[in-house]
Image (cartoon, rainbow, N blue to C red; front, side, top):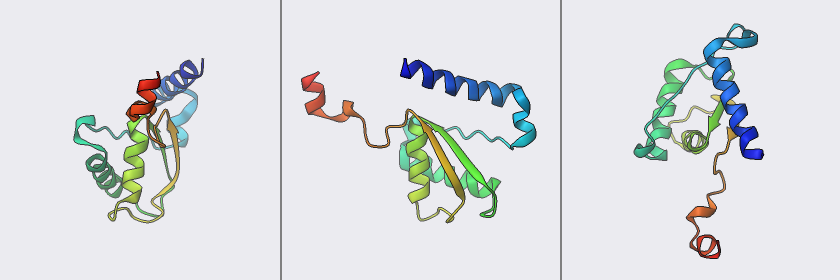
Length: 112
C-alpha cells in the first residue's frame, strides 16, 4: 500500500509537470534534470551542479524533488566542492535509498 501511495504521488507530480494542472506552472518554474544511471552517482552529481549553476543563482529559491537514485545524485551534488552554498533551499525524496539498500547487505540477503 505504501509503495502504491509513493508511486501515485510521483506520477501525479509528473502529470502536474506535463499538464499544468491547478496552475502549478503559473506559480512555479519547473525544471527536469535527467541523467544516465550507468554514469554513477558522483558523476551525475557533478552534472546536476553544472545544471544548477546554468539555470539559477544562489539567491533563487530552489527546491528539489528527487526519486530513487535522484536523491543520491542530489546529495552528491550538495557535498561536492563545486556546489554553491545555499543554492538548494529544500529537498524532498521519494524512495531514495539515503541510508543504503538492504539488498546491498550479504547478511540481509542470506536471511531473506
